[in-house]
Length: 184
Image (tube, rainbow, N blue to C red):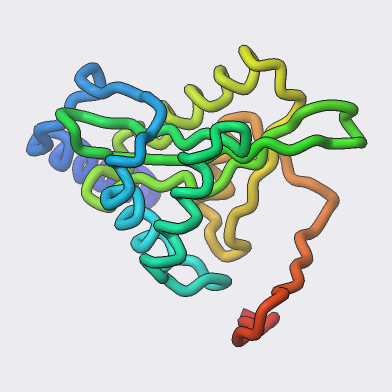
């Protein structure tokens, strides 16, 4: 009974938020990002990295990283979900090769929806577009990382057919920096 009431409350809040939103799903476009999009993309990443435990928001670094992808399409693609010139969501796909798979694979990074437009299906729509892009270009796998503590993100990706891996991520920073606490 309590779950049913809670579910109805969440559904009601979502319906209310959508009713007052000027954004309709059918009025959005997904397309490759351009250099002119850098300011909006940088702000989306800044917001994302305020939520992640392993990274510190840094607009200069975000802009530099985005520019490295946008200026060299052979490195990857940045896709945006846009309405009337405003970017509501973005993701980037980095191209690499897997010797295990024997071909090209993708690393999906930074799928983020603007905080004012979350829980409306935009992230799922953008992710499905990326999956279709990968299939059409004959990539063999998409790999991504999520925060261990972000169960909502893990559930989201699993609902789109992503599977848990037996692999664990390890990293080494090659320039002096404060390493995050491994316990957090």
